[in-house]
Amino acid sequence: MNTTAELSAVSGLTLSQRLVAGLLALILGFVLIGTIGFASDMAVHNGAHDTRHALGFPCH
Image (cartoon, rainbow, N blue to C red):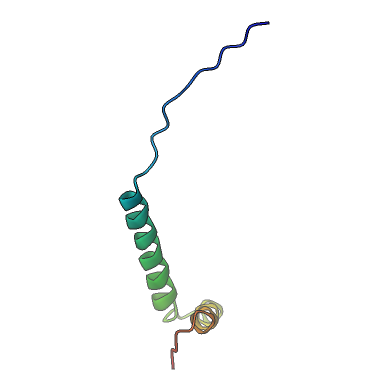
């Protein structure tokens, strides 16, 4: 039985591309956590409030 292995070139991200993507995700997360606290829905506001405290950010 003959088996043939095919090699495919995998194009990964460079370190700088990974750092940029990670930084943008981090900024987006902080913006979402920080701004959703002003939502009028109390359940959403309380969730964001508790998350900010869990991350160590004072909010009042």
